[in-house]
Image (cartoon, rainbow, N blue to C red; front, side, top):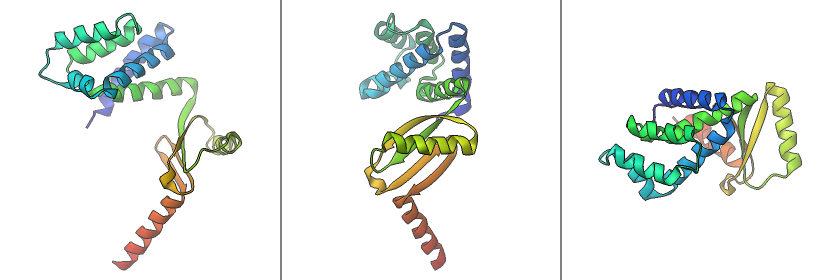
Length: 181
């Protein structure tokens, strides 16, 4: 399991450097694209996290692949992970960095999962109601999951509101099962 506290420390340091350089968004995008490139290819990911591959070899390959294409801060952050043998933290660091970006903007991530694509007015109405209710601004990501049958599942930080048909059926099954014992 990835150490979230350690990932948060790295992300905070990178975000601080990026903010000082006035490149917070660009470096965030660079880190995200680097992580996607590494984790999106099984061989690249295996190379990146393999402890038996020499650090110098990894640094040389990463510099050749990303040097000149990404900001120096992003590249050196990933190279530091290699030097410290903390390559497995990259995905968690990107996620923590994203949280810091949202926090700096005064927003929070909100994921709406539904069985079908919601239209703009439905999403806007739901988000406006949540913003009034919780007194926060949200950056919305919509996910379509046909297995939900119907309804909406809302994920805001550590809060989860499950108004889906499948969620209600699961709750009913738990209630019925608990009544049998």
